[in-house]
Amino acid sequence: MNISTTISNRTRMLAAAFAMMMIIMPTTSLGQQQTPPPPTAPRSVRFPQPVERTLKNGLRVIVIERSGVPLVSAQMTIKNGSEVDPPQLAGLANMTATLLTKGTASRGAPEIAEAIEKLGGSLESDARWDASTVTLSVMAAKIDPAMEILADVVRHPTFKKEEIERQRQQTLDSLSVALRQPGTLARFVASRVVFGDAPYGHSLGGTPETITGIKRDDIARLHTAYYRPNNAILVLGGQITPDAAFALAERLFNDWIKPSTELPAPSTEVVKSSGTEGKARVVVIDKTDAGQAAVVVARRGLRRTDEDYFRALVANSILGGGYSARLNQEIRIKRGLSYGAGSTLEVRRDVGSFIALTQTKNESGAEVAQLLIGEVGRLASASVPEAELVPRKAALIGTYARMLETSAGLVEQVASLALYGLQLDEINKYIEGVQAVAASDVQRLAGMRLAASGAHIIVVGNAKLFIDSLRKQFPNVEVIPENELNLNEAGLRRNVSGQAK
Image (cartoon, rainbow, N blue to C red; front, side, top):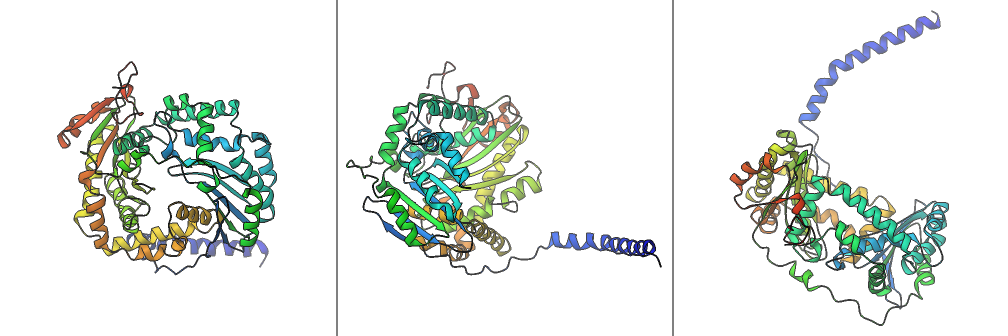
């Protein structure tokens, strides 16, 4: 038998085997789709115990040694973010943080970027609610020179005029694009509806009006007020010993002077934002050129330190925390009204927001609004079956585990715990915290803390295609034409001339 005959016979045998597999596979695959295997029980995991010291100037330094991968991540956290933006300068904290890496007294923006690139690392800075951060990742052997750059950008930014103007234009360009998107616009409006004129009410990135009004003095003033060692937390994690990390922190930050002046007092509006909500609103932004309608159901949620934190995490996961969660099942899979629907729980130092959201064709905007409210309400009115509860808790645990696989993820989580004054060992209590949540806990939490009766509805789209149907369900609808929308105040409305009402 020659080689070509052997190959031919083998080819025929493989073809026959493949044909048999094709006959068998459809039945097997269908069975797997209909009855997916249940998740296995979560395994107990112990992450390294963080070690910490506080320098004489008040800088809190936390180290998590993790050998095995020769990487180190570091995060400098300033314990204030966009919540300290002055009312007319929304976006100031974010612009300040972004500009940190755009030039110091000894390095220009190109030199900073080139130096980090030569070290094979990454350096980023931004602001979010409650914190401004500078994050670094680099090979362990390069951590010393990389940390010198991090210290430089935190302590000695110059805020050059040309960099400010470049950042201003980039921000305005981004806002111009974002505000044309119904989904983004709906979330901006939702923040104002939920929090009013309190600090959490504005957008992290500001608005075109506020960004245009920011001056260099405003940026420098915010940096001087909040970027101080006794208002900062430095976390290092990865292949670095605590002794080495503390020695590095001492060398780079020990002479960082703690100002004699006190930190600015928190705005009284932060306290007010956690009070009782007023009457639920139904707000329509009439965007006549919108190809789709964005629908948001929003209300106040919880603080990060709330005792109901884990119960709320599980409740949100069941409602809209993934493809198999209720909102997506009901709106996308069952009815085909959207490409996806979900919900988010944003916990902060003060009470954060709880949002359910999706996009749909304009004609079904009212129907989807009713579905969102209905699913939020159903979470409180009926117990969650175990067959639904177990997989959603497994999804939360799996996501958390994946985040902590990297040094950067571990550092970020520890920094968040430190920011909110929580015990650092909570990283080892997450699994048991999620697993302890029962179906009755979810139902009680949803009824008391995330009730549909206290939720606002925001719809952004071509109003003429859904407004009549929406009014039949919700008589108290407010309609604001897009050209009268004012995102800078809780009233949300201005005259066509541009003046706020």
